[in-house]
Structure formats: structure tokens, C-alpha cells
Amino acid sequence: MGIKDFFDLIDLEKIKEFVQDQQEEHLTLEFKTVSRADLTDKQDRRNFAKAISGFANSSGGTIVWGVEAKGNKQKIDCACGFKEIDQLSLFLSKLNEFSGQFVTPVVDRILHKKIEIGKDKGFAATLIPESDSGPHMAKAGEDRYFKRSGGSFYQMVHYDIEDMFGRRKKPKLALSTDIVSGGSSDSPPTRLFDCHLFVGTENLGRGLAKHIAIEIELNEPYHLGDLWYHTAERYGFKALRRLGSKASLISLGADVVIHTKSSLRVALIPFKVSEASGPPQDVVINAQIMAEDMPNVKDSKTIKGSEIIEKIIPKDK
Figure (spheres, rainbow, N blue to C red):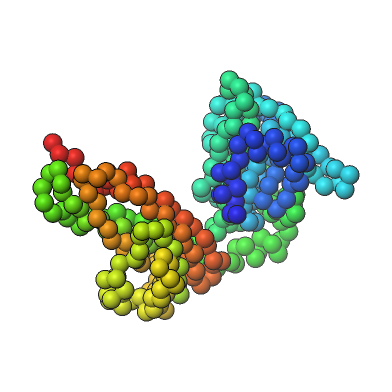
């Protein structure tokens, strides 16, 4: 499970489970209490700055706010109690405000959410992704670089910082989709529309993506279009291999690259949408994306039938 999946799972029941099970802090999980919701307390500000720096300079991670952590019998910090946050909306607002101020350079894609137990009272969670633009210095009175090791943040020494400055920019690929209408036949109310659902990958990283391969699995009754297989080499895709009725492996070849902040269509799912029969079945796409200089990434998307209808069938005036 990735850190974003873990962050998405955090709700009130999960927080109760953390305390009941005495969940230990670890490489990607930190528990913190808050003295003041407006983040005017010096220690709260420093804790937040250190966490952004430490997680971003390491593998990323999640802070759960409002849970107290203390050492257990093995002297390992674990969740032991609740310290709910009053003025929860104010606290979330301050987290958003200071996310870009408590570290330099700024860490992109930090997420916050609140978990309420009453009127403007409860807990919060912060997701800090691993950054490929570091190292990141903690501000708010720290002015130091941190990294995550085990369940703690440590000040980075000179060779750690030197190593991060010397790192090569890396790609970061994610699954992307695009819905395109292929036209219609007949006339209202029995029109039948061709739908072209393109599956692709987007480079969110700072380095070129090379030697790319994507394994795609679809739910029934969907499949990749045969025409796409026959014309693939026109796009530089050197090898496409079916892995069964629902899955395919697509290798994009050595000559194909995806530049940063760019995307590339790699496969096509063709089907028809009937105006009379309503929304089609949801399309579920599971993918594993591979490329040079990055770990294999598992990603998935569900395209709702209602979303397809909105994109494909025009609203008659």
C-alpha cells in the first residue's frame, strides 16, 4: 500500500484503532499533538517544519494530528491516547497556509484533511510526499535539514545534503485517461455513439521518462482495441503482448520518451454508448508502470459510466 492509499484510509475508526492497537510510529507515520489551533505555539510550528523537511527528504509520510505518542515498554514511540483539536477548521486553514512557508524550497502536493468528532473538534491528517526537488530545509526557527529514519526525524549531516544536491532528476509516472467521442449514428433518441477511451501515462517527475512499459488490466467486458495493436508501431511502440483476455503489456521502445509535465496515450479502449440505454458499465483500469530510474508504480482509475455519458453525448438544446 502506498502512502497516498494509507492517507485516504485514515478516518475516525482508523484513529481509534491506532490507539487501541498501540500503533508504533515508523518510517512513514508520525503522531503529533497540538497546543494551539492557530499554530502560534513555537513547538507546534517547529514540529510541522521538521516533519515536512524530514518526510520530503526521505520516503514521504503521514502526520496524524491529535494523537499522543509515548514510548512503550520497548521504548518505541506508539499511539497511547487522544488529544482532540478544538477549532479544527482554523487548524486546517493554518496547515494549508504554512505548508509553503515552513520549508524551503516548497514541497509540492502536500494534502491535509480533518476528521471531526463533534462541532469543529477532532483530528487531522497531513500527507507529505517524497520530493525529487530537495533537499528541503525546515524553517520556523529550525533552519536545518532533516530526514526520516525509523520512527524519528534526524538532522541531516553534510554528506547527506551533498548527496541530495547531486541526485539526478528522476521521472515519476502515473496513469492518465482521456475520453474522446468518435461520432454518432442514427438520430435521437436512438443515437449510438462511438467512445474512444485512451489510456496513457503522465510524467509528474523532473526527469525524462525512458524505456517505459505499461501493463494494463481491464474489467469485463472491456478490452484494448485491435486497431491499436495493428498501428502501434506508427507511434514508436515496439512490442505489445496480450497477457490474456483482459490484460496487455505495452513496451514503448527505446526511442520513446515522456518529458516532464507531459503525457502520452499508449492504448485505446473502444466501445459504443447508446443514448437510449443510459450510462455504460464503469471502466476499471489497473496498471503497473515501469521506466528507467524509477520504481515500478501500481496505479488504478475508475471511469464512471455517468462521466462517459457527460463527455460523449451532447446535451440537446
